[in-house]
Length: 164
Image (tube, rainbow, N blue to C red):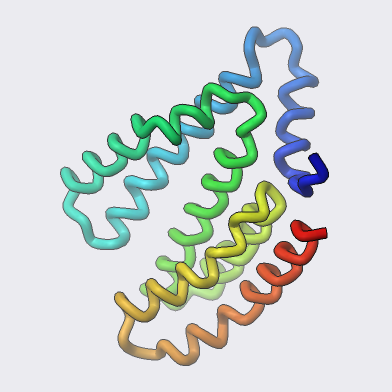
């Protein structure tokens, strides 16, 4: 349909190249969904939710019909893959803000780029990071906002490519 999502197509190709496994497409979707559920739990723990609240929220996330639908449809792999990289990017960005580790910031940027290469709707991540900084971090926000400039550049490029 003219969508640009090379990482998603690469994951389909990897599944296609493993014909000895029965049902690799659905199995991969299920594994990605389980990984997303674990990442939601980790993200909520980073946001200082209690263990039980984070666990309950991750359970609701995993059983929600919109999430289950992406597992059942093989063609919806792009949502699952984008969510994995989106959540990893957000978690590593939060880790950067708490530990001031530039390695975490670089990883966050790379995960964000991978999310944009999985599905174009990942372009919202820099805004989510800004909201996190606004509501959770009170010190050094201006410096952290400036570090988000490369994220916005990738967002603009990915959005432009998606429109084309």
